[in-house]
Image (cartoon, rainbow, N blue to C red; front, top):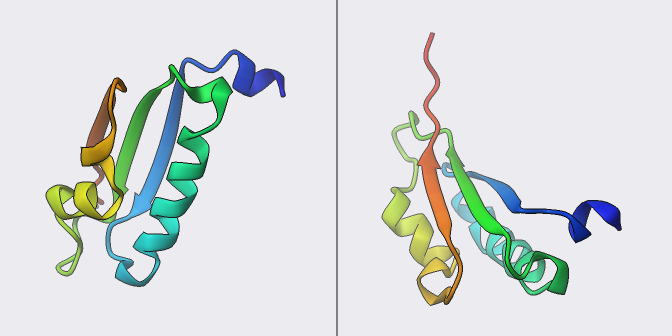
Length: 84
């Protein structure tokens, strides 16, 4: 796949209000990060729905997604809030 072969970064969006599927998101993210083509890709994560009252904090999501175990990989985690 030419897209993966030339990718400099990976964008991953997570629903920070969906506690039931955070483990599924973690598994999918880990699968992608294990691909050889994405070995050097910078990881940009967006925590969607941070404006909701029961949304997980970035620190909790970092833990549940297993990001603390990442070695030799640059990642950025950003909050997304809805503004009306």
